[in-house]
Length: 343
Image (cartoon, rainbow, N blue to C red; front, side, top):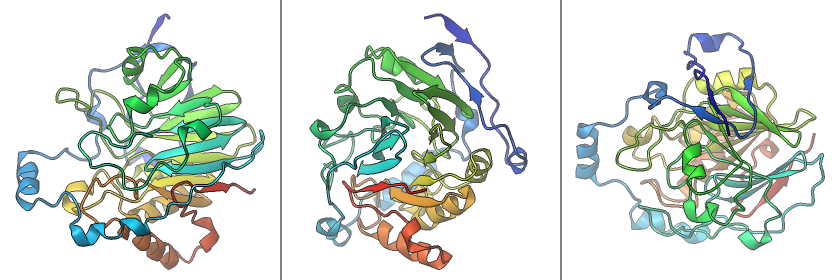
């Protein structure tokens, strides 16, 4: 493939976010591109330094205690059959953590697929995968939010045909091409591409990237907005803290039908505030987006932080009730659960 050299879009400042912007630039599928060596200028908060690492080691608050783990048997796990769909159906099924089976515009799309029992640096998953790999329909595309091990899982991706269309952040394409994937589309923030009548737009997130000791922020991170030919849209936030990007995403993608937002891995707050929303912040982000419905994710699967395992859902439901919004707009699915969008 011929290389394309183009200066990536400049990050949008909070001041610029107050004014409407074009939705995104359209890019062709599968082209190889040249990227900056580092994306640290996209960070919206400094990464933890030596002092913060020392405090974390001193406090040792990286996993819940025995009391916080007692709720594991109560975690919602209700696997069921995938919904029947056609080209006009939008349906989502939560496989666990940030992994969704998204049916839109006749396509089956996986988000951050992790079907492994264990990921690097964590205990084994505390709920099974909500949908067996053998029960998936043919996968038409995969979107990846960033390269952390709980979102980019090499053993799961090895199960895919190497011609599967993949939509990935800027500079992450080489990771896939080294593994012989041939249909890889890398996008910068506010860029999009189309496949089979569905548009895939890459949008900012308040997060970072790192996979080895030497590659901090060498690849970009973000979320995805998928829109079908009739304008129905689903926002997959990936992994993110709370911040100004949500309002701008809502401006550029008005009337989102569904927002898939993370609610877990938030304690201790002083350590994780900048990169993971807590349940109350997730509801605030949903309000900023102006979406119609919200489905929580990034909890009840891996023990990544210190909050009790059942706390995220309890806090989410309380925060939602305080908004006064209709209860049916909160899609708090169990692992393995599905919901079909009605227009």
